Amino acid sequence: MKHVSILVPQGQYSIVNIAGTHQMLGWANDMFLQQARKRLFQVEFVAATRPAADSLGMYTITPMRTLDEVERTDLIIVPAVHEDHAKAIAMNEAAITWIRERHHQGASVAAYCIGVFLLAETGILDGRTCSTHWGEAEHLRTMYPEVDVCSEKIITAQDGVYTSGGAYAFTNLVVHLIERYGGRELAIMTAKTFMIDVDKCDQSFFSMFSGQKQHDDALVRQVQERIEARPEEALNVEDLAAGHATNRRTLERRFRSATGNSILQYMQRVRVESAKHILEQEHKQVADAMYAVGYTDAKAFRKVFKKHVGVSPSTYRKKFQRAVSLVG
Image (tube, rainbow, N blue to C red):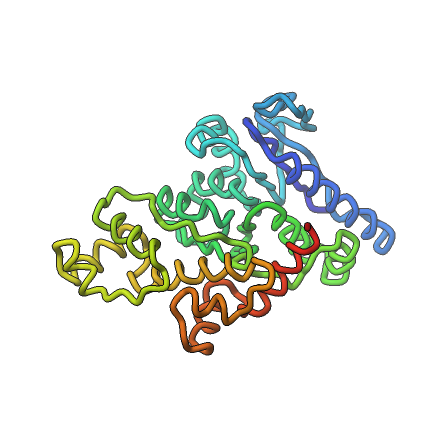
């Protein structure tokens, strides 16, 4: 039987992550008990203190054990903490140390959404690939440059270290963990019961590109604003550089250093984001979006769109125009 420690962090923790994981593992336990006549998991809430109230005072969880009472564990679950990242880390220094020590003793670790920041602080993610909520990926890259952040991934798994993307992506990771410990059949049964799409592996479909502005380079910011003002315009990098009293090589170097993208890549991402907004509107066709953002070649537009979103423009349009009509 595998011992699972669901961490109840200090601060405004995600009750959905904690309760949802407990419910899914509990259900898998019941099914495994019926088939194998033994339990698969021993699941416990653990925390630095007893009880553990969230910072808003909305929830209080009484852990089965405090961190120093846990003699051994096989898997640690780290939920999201909805606080300023530096504050969340400061509030959870004891848990961060405990996670690091337990991992060195052989425990696997799974972190959800922005709970990945706590895991990154342990150093366990250095040199490893991870996911997080797509809206916080740039923060994570900035704070932890040694971590390979793949924000398009729903889940990552590497040497007993697991991460999930934003919000309810944690359910996909729980299914993966159930498969890891209990087998494919049990994982599929769990996914069907909780109505989880086990084939979903990319969260680019849901992301919104808001521009990589977390830098202090005023020149680069001006160029970004110029690109965003007229995404349909075919801008020449030489002209952009000349218009800002610099040369192409210097501008390209500073732009990539500040944003992580080349100027061409940034133009593509801005165009794709504009196209997504158009495709979400009722009665708009793929051609409307294509021409509005400056493309005239349908094949090229489809290729760039799918590269950044993970699906074709027509698939995206069907998904979100249908959602809008249902809401309306």
